[in-house]
Length: 213
Length: 122
Length: 164
Image 1 (cartoon, chains in turn red, orange, blue):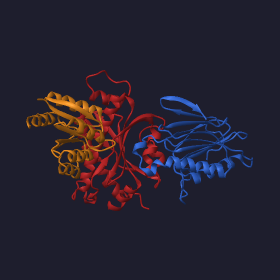
Image 2 (cartoon, one colour):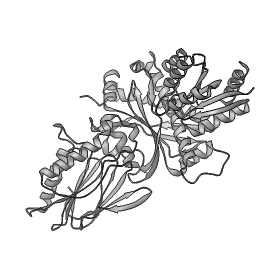
Image 3 (cartoon, chains in turn brown, cyan, orange):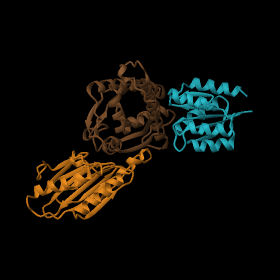
């Protein structure tokens, strides 16, 4: 089975992912009332072991809100952050109270809704770019994948490696390398340790490798 | 007479924001639901004048809830308030009878003028 | 490979296998994956495999990824280090959590369970008794195995660790 993408396919897809992430940060800026920017590294096909470190050192405690994506492309979409940057995000949304020190129901709700907003905006842009006949990133991208629907996000606070294992399982069942792009977020020009990851499952990777010429 | 609103969204923070804007524009929030199933139940018992409906929710999504509410009451006024902004989904909601589709994150003024307009439409 | 006790503290990554003797610690992080620890008390020999899937279905590589290849390979590496000494192995197993249970498609939901069954079956075939287990649940595990004693401590975020 072909699950690996060639250099040209990776470049095309990297362009689509980066543009979608930029679109998503516009929604995030409006939602948080702050200037949010993102830099997206080019997509990489990496080993399972290396991929488990995408969210941080294996034994680092991270928070992650995860959604499952269905529709034309399937997989998982995740927004992760460490405690300080996650709670700072909640403080920006919940202005009229003391800064949060722990994850209560309200903070988790704020993190999940932020993930819903940034995740949906990312998927909206992705679906639109894939559907365009003359996509700004090249005509190779003109493959129709239809709508992309996420599930409601679920929050977890756990070891980075443990969270990644769950996310990688769909791809790991069929392939030994995974496709991912790292993101670098800036809020009011200050870097924050957020990470937005889209991890398509193995059949979706196959579809991409067939359709992205 | 104050008009009655049912807010449907799985996110507590979003329900708080919608509630605040609705009350400011003269609505009475008679109920809040965090999933589609509960939204349909509350609609049946509360018969609100307006429903704001999220799409991505557990148990039953907002499109299914819209379908069920419109089947129970073809005159029901439901406004979708969702982060999903994809042509097929918006078209599906309008076809099912949604009166408007507001994309999250919304501009507060956009929602205020929507609530004010709906408040006048008796 | 990792023979002897030259490295005292080693991290075993996804689909990895490491074997160490005499002293030191082998560590791994487990979400949905299974950590298999094999130990021989007399030789103070310990092997740790980080297993991802139940069945290789003929795909041989990477050997540490699948139960049916990882179990014999861990035993083989341990026998190589033992250099002819007869091994009396015992096993401890941990992992197989499902952190985002509601997000799992039905196929991945069962992988944790399938992994557990496959490991138990493979150990039974090799007549290795399971002397400790900590499986399932919805949270990740940090596992630390003591090479000299075979003791295994399992850590969680936000609650106390347990000894296997």
